[in-house]
Length: 423
Image (tube, rainbow, N blue to C red; front, top):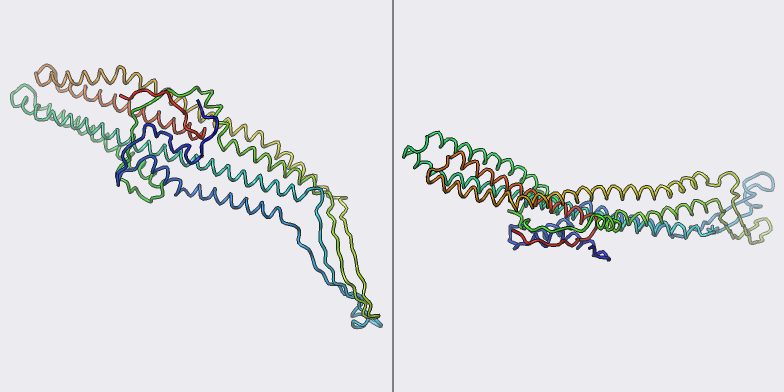
């Protein structure tokens, strides 16, 4: 079952497949744990998400700032005609004004800014999960390709081991010289398949290198195990845990932010009060006086109705956006879960029947070939069947662990599997 309390996000996917992907860390061998740690340190997407948090923090600080006061200087009754010629009859006023927001406008802005910071912080967690999951999946692709190439190497070696025996049979007249060519063709075809896999491995290695911050692969190989599996929890438990995904959690903060923006839009028509105080000097009489001003705008023509409607629709849209986001995550989780279950069923067939019988047949036919009871074609066919069964097993194992990594990246926590002993 899923843990009730989410583990720290940085550790959540760090153990995506750690129960199975364990190995000794060599100087040129990359482990899953090291790849995940380096991906977190090197990801530009995560850096951008962190900057978004900083941007939102700055906006929140700005939202709480008070309005600046204003200083003004006025001069009346000057530079005219007659008695108002020059500045003899001038009236000069030095005044300071301050606008005061009422009805909680500043508090609403601060609330919207705080919700924006929370949204950005949660989104950063979502990006972190995505980076970890993507890195884990790419690591598994490299590991799976390595293992499949190893299986093809073993098949080439098995065919090459037949060469001395085949040569002796030809010399003894027990086999046709054409069989030598047939063995060479079989070996060449396997090598061609191996070269195709090496291209796949090269692409996966390059992708992994970029994810961990290198322009090109600097590791000789990756280390880990794929041969252990387990039974997952029910899909209902997976769906229930998806609600803890940061991609969905952030909609709570988004809703709070948009609700604060709606409140701010509704408060905007309420007038602010501007209070001014100044000192007026009358040049003609050399007298002074205090000037006080109180001004309030009249919301007669603009009551911000358009922005209120827009904020209302944005708030209502939040629920639909969250539901659409949740449906997308469930679809992705469902595909991964079905792949996981299908891989388990495929592995059961391969391990219980196909691989043991293929191994038994390959041994029997190989031994019988040396005694002249089987043809080379039968030997090659038995080796090919065994190789294909082993390749299918590795593909199913890789698909299983990729599905595990995908689901754990969605739920934000490793989920427990009822372990089965590995072969």
